[in-house]
Image (cartoon, rainbow, N blue to C red; front, side, top):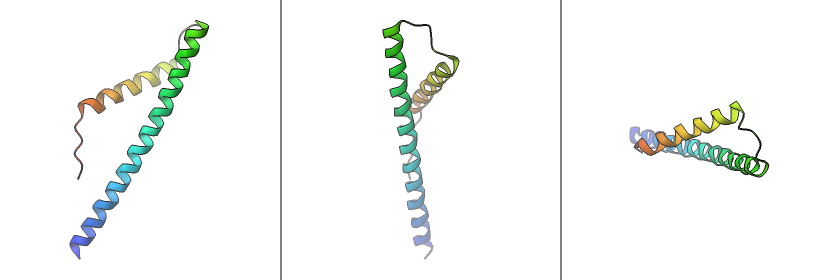
Length: 76
């Protein structure tokens, strides 16, 4: 009985981790698409620079990408 509960708990954790990872990646893809649009619009219009919020978001996602490359994830 104890083994079943433990297996069920681990399965539940895997499902939550997978959903969380999927949501994170989806949000990341949306942001990257928006950033690409901003870069294209900026090139086309040759207008000013990014506003502070866009710059902060870009730096945030850059740091997350660096962490993803350097962090080893251990899955159960």
